[in-house]
Image (cartoon, one colour):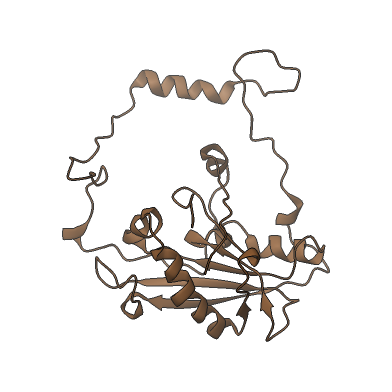
Length: 236
């Protein structure tokens, strides 16, 4: 089944300005066994030595500190160095509004030992999945869905955004399926160039979603999209 991929990219600056809220649907993943932990500087590629991170010099630190004092950019600004934040207004969709029906979020856990595709290379692990079901969803009908990697939707208040946009009829009544990554196996899931992760979502996650949340996910590829950042920047 073809899944259309839409990408949401957060810049380092923007993410640095917005502290990640606690994510009730995701529990901290246990650390992999010590013998299998990657080197502190990250794994090497193709048998090469791990990359060594060069510490910042005092001069670098001082230059970076100057960035905080740059003047704010304006449309009338001439060539030069300026700051472009953090004076961005908060999107109104992020705030709960009185009178807007709120959907529900259903959580369940997937055990790697039950997966044919990701059984756990470094040992068994658990993956939390959150499913947002809008208040307008009609039981038994197929609904469009947005599928979020790294459970991004819970990190960035997607349920409230969808509540508001569905109520304003800017979006259809749609599901949000927010899937936590495989912890130590995250890169293998997201960076491997194959259809394996798509098959995992299609064959293992979506059937559980329909069972646990009592919903039906549309099989129309035009009614599906994904949300992610960083590694999740390509699809089939």
